[in-house]
Length: 391
Image (tube, rainbow, N blue to C red; front, side, top):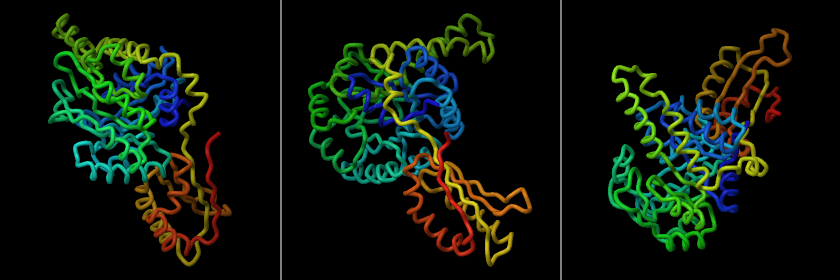
């Protein structure tokens, strides 16, 4: 299992002078190409799921596929919610398996951005999940992702960045220094002096959104000035689109598999080029040596009931499943009855937490406190509980 804590992954990149790609995916072809490239280059990587792309795939299904791919990989992988739209988006993403989240409030007033981001950080950190904030505004110019980011570029202020990080507690910060979402028009001009000052003021991993169209030298300068995560999508979509057009021009009657033939190879070549250029190639083993393995924790209770019958116990557990599954950091809640009629304990709970931190935050969450005090403990005095992690 090579799913690792994204905070540790990016901390290693930041302190060792390279950047990890946050590669957005919109299909299994993207997912397989990203993982294959990482394996070939022995590079850590981030599977990025952008809410702005949810029209193109089922988010819940995508997280299942991304998590399975990460667990099968021999390289360090993290799964990140990119450009989430709300606090609820972040909770849902964490409960579905993302171990990094970013809710984009950069278009809001500074005070509102701080307030929302601070709320997300408090929730996510209680789940062990790092948070990416964004200050300034990276607009879109052209390309399929540009329309999701209308308006003009707003550059990140150094002073505001320092205040923002101090007040929110974010683990990494996306900054605006001249890049755009989608394709660039003309030669990109980046404000490296501004980036240098931000890096010196914050001393945390920085993120660049809108990496397509930059030169190799520009990427090197970004990394030299604190950028440890680079979001990348448009160039991959273009590589896949160009290959599909080539396939159709060669055979305009080809079916679906003929149209998409070779697109994974086209995207993989571009991803590997980025990994080499950004310095993440060959860093996999070093990251695995220092990064926390991202493993769920299971909270198990076996119990008998008093002063209620089996039907009432079943109703209580059904209500508990519904309430507790909404708690941040809870992957799933399962309840059941013992198969053996002579078992010492008749009923059981299994609650899966995304991270060890959730043991404490779950215990103190209002939904759990209300349910446990008013519905569960009054009838389940005879019980045993344990929190465990798989070996």
